[in-house]
View (tube, one colour):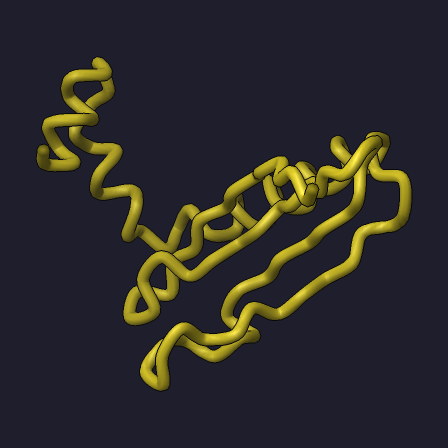
Length: 103
């Protein structure tokens, strides 16, 4: 299934697809990453640590192009907030938040 079909089936406007490669959204994504860290730190049992992911291949963006912030939470889980380059040529970013069971 095409991404445009998925966006449409969820009732979202097709203009959202253009926003994925529009660098004017990047300051907002950076601010939202910082806000995600601030709002979720209360669940961290230790301070946030930052990790630089390794490139998957020699042609992948440099490790500094991605930012991963991790902290342990109760039990064996990790809370992870990441910001990744979505289009290196356009200089655009995306942000993801995940809870990972480390057991």
